[in-house]
Image (cartoon, rainbow, N blue to C red; front, top):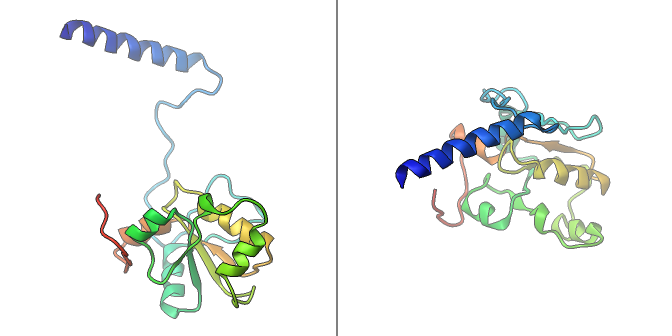
Length: 171
């Protein structure tokens, strides 16, 4: 029984590798991962566009946080936000925004905030592009001083910076 399972496993792996080799959109066997961030260079995603707001590195995000002039906006879902975020950040969960005209939503979330206020969007980290899409949306609605901290919460926490947890979560 174990021998048959091993044979099936080996045949499945060989078949999967062969099919992958002939497909036009094959998956690389060895991934092309970026190097670990040192915190002083911005992380820029491959789908960035020249019209996107600027990307900032951890050191600049920390400086803006310490100066207290910027509004940090967490684009992750509310559950992740509750488990940990940059202190004082507001949650604008991009995947959960209402359908239709977002202008009303943004006007209520940013009530009384001038459109030239410094806003820094972020999400989980470099595997999450919610911060990029949120920044694009804010820019489309007339916000003019937006930056994207693409290293996100994961990089912030990894470098031992202060975090705010509204509830304890596993992991």
